[in-house]
Image (cartoon, rainbow, N blue to C red; front, side, top):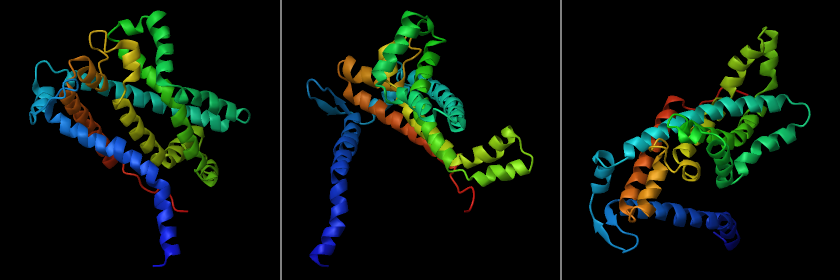
Length: 282
């Protein structure tokens, strides 16, 4: 192999090397360290790391002072509300934007703005609306739905753009054929749009589930787990144990890996249940 050919083969790897290095340092190595810490009674302040085996996991799953199952229940309820809200909001918005003959770019921008606005800013806005001016955050029944509403508002615009991209890929002749067969607007949506958006729906659902299970900023800013732990989600529980309760990093790391296991199993089941496949042949 001559030098010129070797150079051509190495150049693409040099382009991706910075991103790959960041992934290795801040993802792979960090995950390995957190897994190591989860098997130790690690004190970040004192630097002690006594090996305890599965004690942190046993404490999280079976100890009476553990709030893992409560946090998991709250997080799962939040995920269900967020996923349903995003799907019921983003897809109709995409359909409306697609039909708009004028100002489509303006509508896309306005709907997308919350998705690029920092989460702290959105949480502060919602806190003043529902916490200062309203009473939703003071009730156990309404606090978690209020947080889910924030999640829907912040994520609907991004997912709307994904649905718009999926809608643009649907061949127009399918709608023409449906009209010839006498299909009305609802029948076209049910038998043409939804099947053709299958892959996009799967992607949006999976990514929304992953993001919703990691909800933290809105809880930290708006409710801090209250009232009466009704909004204490897993990510907030991890934060409290890692930084607010004598630096229990080992226990917090175990909670983080349990969260990873929950999300992994959930997404795996979802992907197996709705396995992507080609809808039509070109």
